[in-house]
Structure formats: C-alpha cells, structure tokens
Figure 1 (cartoon, one colour):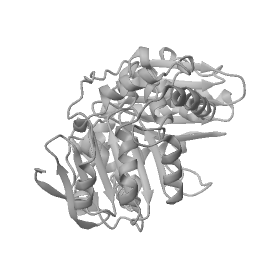
Figure 2 (figure 1 turned 135 degrees about the horizontal axis):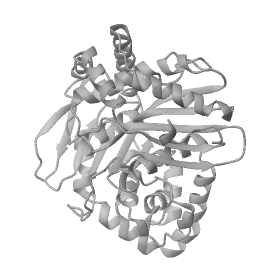
Figure 3 (figure 1 turned 30 degrees about the vertical axis):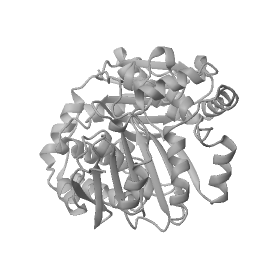
Length: 428
C-alpha cells in the first residue's frame, strides 16, 4: 500500500518514534507507543449531531446507542461475548462533530479483537428488530439521566446556533422510536467516510496499526456538505418547579479556524476567570467566584469546534432568587476585563500542568489528537516543548485583546429551573 509522508508526534513530555500517516484514501493513521500498560485503539469519524437534518434529528444518538449491534460478519451476541471474554472494553462517545469508537484491552488481545472492532464501526447491519428493540430504551435512559447543568448548556447551544452545531447530541423526545434502520443507514452512509476519519492507537506499533487500517472498508469521500456555523445570539429557557436555577451564558469564542495565539489566549482567560475548584470540596479562586455570594456555584465554560466556539460561564443557584443578581455580576466581570501579568503567569502554569496530565491518559490524549486531525486541519505539535513554547509566547496583550473581543460580542443564554428572578437578555 502506498503511503504518504510520516511525521513525529508527542506523548507527554517525551518525543515518540512513531507518527501519523495520511493514506492515499484520506484516512489518517496515528500511533502513540508506550502510552499505558494496555492497548488502546480508537477510530473517530466526523459523524456528530452537527450533520443531522430536521427529519433525522437524533440519528447520531441512535447510532451511538446501537453501538456493538450485529454487523454483516458478527452477531450482537458474538461481539458482546468476544469482548467480555477478552476482558476488553468497547466504548462509544459522541460530540457535535466527532463520534469516537474506542477499544481498551491488553496488548496481546488487541490484534485478535481489531477485526471485530473495525467491523462494528464500519459495517453495521442495522437489523430492524435489533434497532427497534435496543435503541429506544437506551435513548430514553440517556434522556432521563441528563443533569440540569448539561440541559442548560444544550439550551445555550440551541439559542446561539439554532441548527447545525446547535443540534443537541441527544435525541429530542419526539423522535424517540422513530430512528429505524433505514434512517440510521442513510445517516451512516452520508457521514462515515475515510476522508472524515482517523485511526489512533496507543501501545500499538505503527506497522500493526497500518495493517488494521487495511481492513477498513468505507468510501474514500463523503457526500455530506458542512453548513457554515452562524452565531445568532438570543436565549432559550425551560421553566421548572423547585428552588434551583441553572444558567449557561456564552459569547462567540475561539474556534479551530482562529489563530493558535487566540486559542491559547482563550485557554488562559478561562483559567483567569475560574474553572471551579481544583481541590475536592474546595472554593474556586477565579474572578467570577470572588464576585458571587450566597449558595451560588460558577465555572467558566469553553467549547471549540471547527468553525465556531462558545466561551462563557455556567451558574448554579441553590436559591433561585439569586439568579438575576448573580447573572448581572458575572456579565459585569466580562464587560470590564482588566488582566494582570500575575494572572497570566498563573494561568500559563495551570494550562501547561493540565495538558501534561491529559497527555498521560490515553483517552484524553486521543481526544486532543483526533480534534487536531479532524477539526484543526491535521496540524500536530512536533514535540511537547513546542506546546509549552506556544503557551509561553502568548503575552498579556494577547489575552487582553481576546478579553476585549469577548466583552464586545453578542450574548446567548440557556437556562432551566425556577427562572422567576432571572431577567431576559433585553432587560440586562
């Protein structure tokens, strides 16, 4: 098989001897040896909820719920038994853009399970009776376990982007039971293609990973066209009984289409404002935590996508009467940004520490790498020193510029709970 040039990648703070290969069919194959004591194989595809249309909303959720069902070569029972007997784990995670299938097992059993794993990802049978028996129940269970915090963030996305990237990664309740095999196969055929996929292995040699890649049978190119994201602003509210109020507020952030310096500035500003407590049951030390009083918790949030992003804050009020006052104080912090050199230096240390820790976890590392390949145009940092140098190259002026950009941007809000005392955006 003819292969393109290979580049080195990084694990933690040591340079790897393996790399990433871009195959002629469009598939990116990336290996990270010695990541952990076990083998970790992941295949990721641009098949998230962003690519759904109104008539098939929730298809990506149904596809995730149907993971591990029968393929054209393996039965549902055979896949389950094979994975369990090997002591392996087969997990599926899904975002708005990327759907990831992961296999965790001992290094000795990865080769014997790889065929079954790849078959489950790329060649599902979508049998009518299996889809109708399994998917609705799993979807209902997922919907019943959604936290108010997550629901507030979903409402924020809906208000900010409406469709496309604004589509929830969970199926709307009115679509439960409507995802038949034809709908799932149609969504699968339009989104699953080699030019939209990547294969990543931890603790697996690059040669072995390329052999696994040869077994992948998907079209080279997809027929799906990605609609550009537009930030509309506005708000979505869901009124409920009780004493609690949950608010997610966001501005247009820094996407993968933005410059590297702006994305790093966003990370630093996130730490300056506060991302909750770094100590169990501790109190957050960010700017937002210092201005809020009473039974109120807050944390900054940032979601980065290919051509869109959200940068904002989540507020949880145990006493709903504090919602309006808390929101006004938080907005005041955003509207009057004053960054100090000490804050930037502390934020840099936190970001570098968080990234170095993430690189030691195979799941977190694969999340970083798959986003760099599928969303970031395939640009991967050559070594960890380059990552640290990029962070340290950002100045206080860069962070201040990003903060001012946020302060002058339109605002969106999603809220759920008792919203009696929460003002509408046009009242602020």
